[in-house]
Length: 389
Image (cartoon, rainbow, N blue to C red; front, side):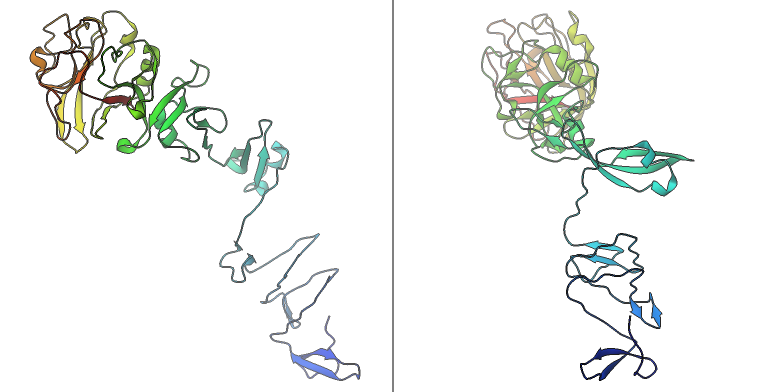
């Protein structure tokens, strides 16, 4: 409190020395500084004595504590002397674990907008906010997106222990955060409560990423065919032989609408249908689908993609062809045209009719170039992996 005695109107005493001399100061622009603790009962208001609560600054170099309300009509700066917003913080904000999330703490309009941080029994932290969701209806909601954690050894998954339905789910549904990118992920195509989740390789780079890889061939003899039910555990991203069983292929097909073949020269061919359907588990099936086909340089064509889980001892287990379609001319390789004609992708292994795969390209599309006219030898010249999203 300033004493005005001895000063002209509009001024206040600034200093009283030992001799009693008074130094006065104009009320406007009055300021004061203090080192050590300063206690007050009541209000401390910035501004002049004639207009307390007006404009002015209260600056605390260390702690500023209030057991009651701290009311600021202007901006508050923490770590900055030039706040540009109601609350301007240069540094981190920490919200402690508050231990519980009571419905009674979010059941009226005055409580909406609250933020609370909680750590659950699995030591997983989440931010929650109180929102209004209707007339006189309020609820706590989780604010932070679930992030992706894990690596190629453990398999990546969501931080809350759940899984995306496919590789594409990890980059389209949640934050793309952590040790992510191409590699091993857990997927659960039919969701919680259905079949068990399983590990897959994900191509998170090619053509926007999100491709769940189900097969890869190196061109060597005796490799499993694309329709095979035998699992092979090589790394397809390194163009090693790889194969998922039929149930997993069907599960991924059920949540996919596009397929892709990626070669070891970085070119690719994709079309707008899943690789397989539920018939893969049934005997003697050979469906084919009308598709729009696109090469990695943008070249496009209409055609067909199809597979056969029988009549394939000499090849023809999978094929992608032009609009001329499949001719089904031989029960030795059902989805292989005579002379391999019009095939953007085919398998042919006539030297030994043992049902293994040798894949090639007879007809190019854009930069998806041909590998062989019609190669019936063991193995193939196409090194690639196949995926869906």
